[in-house]
Image (cartoon, rainbow, N blue to C red; front, side, top):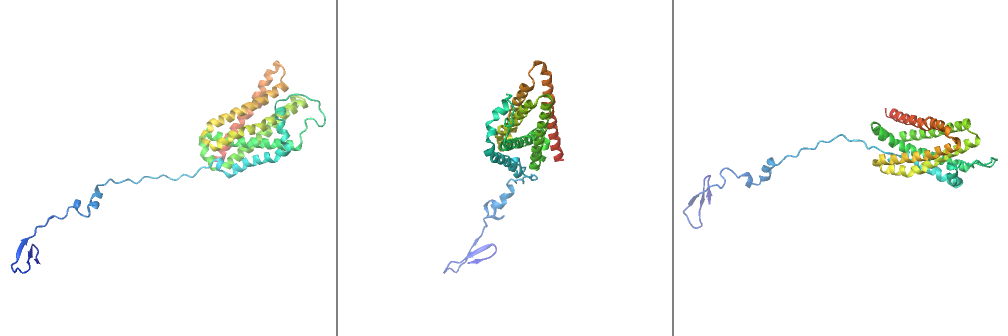
Length: 288
């Protein structure tokens, strides 16, 4: 068989005559892309092009008190103080009702109404626990009512919680001193003692009542509005019990109603308003 550019000559065996047959190409213009091996590459030009998604700058992870070592250490410290003092001061818990409600005047002697060192330690451990609960609740309260401070407060959780707790301790000491002075000026020694015992008992039991609310707030900060409302109701109820005890001790005539109203405004309401303003100002200063 002989082949040239345009024709193919085929010679059969034993046949000396050459038969020439013309060759006609099947694809004179080349193999179409749809039928060739490069059909996939040819169709890629017709495929839709996916746009690359635009990313955003990464945000730093904000920590709450539950994930802050310092805040949790402060909470555990308050619990630890209660456990340590419980063995020698459990009698103080048994006398909660008497200290909180009783206005009975008994005959004074050397041993009456005296507290052991265990009772005093238990009392201050419970008060410290209350201040820690209030500090954590105030942290969320400031963030809820002043949203512009929330991001900055989350960047310095322990600093804010620690200062709020210390402020609550300062408020307790201020109120204790104020009630002591008022009891000394407007009452006798027994009235002053009964009033102060009611104040310390109310502060001690307040922390125990606020503990479950604070725990739920740490676990579910998205429900801050509801839980802070419950905490405010608990605080108001405890204060009403204490105020009612003071009313029974000092105000026993209807003509003294004006003095009672002045007491509520100047001693119970105004200091709390100033304290709230001071806490917001302090948190604002910390974030600046």
